[in-house]
Figure (cartoon, rainbow, N blue to C red):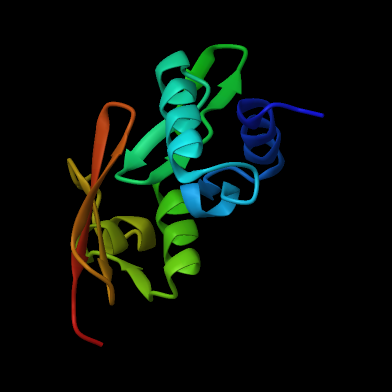
Length: 132
């Protein structure tokens, strides 16, 4: 039988890039304190990245090292988990469509959920609340 951290890492590796982990998913394996401690230790070891409070993702490994997953994949996974609607902010959308060549410094998204900042490695992604 696998230990709690091994079970968490196995589950995290089975998710696609940007797949989100929360402590609630692992309460069947142990107490809340044990799950929180295991997630904290895995984050300190570099096996997981803490995106926001109570939310972790698996870093992407390549032959050049590890990196944070793509921001749009993480934001979409969070939106699917919380049942929110997410869309790129105006400057990001204009750049993606090709209307402008200016690249925004920070990635920003509009959501039907609450406003929050996500930390993906060295970059910060702003998710702002906007009415439907």
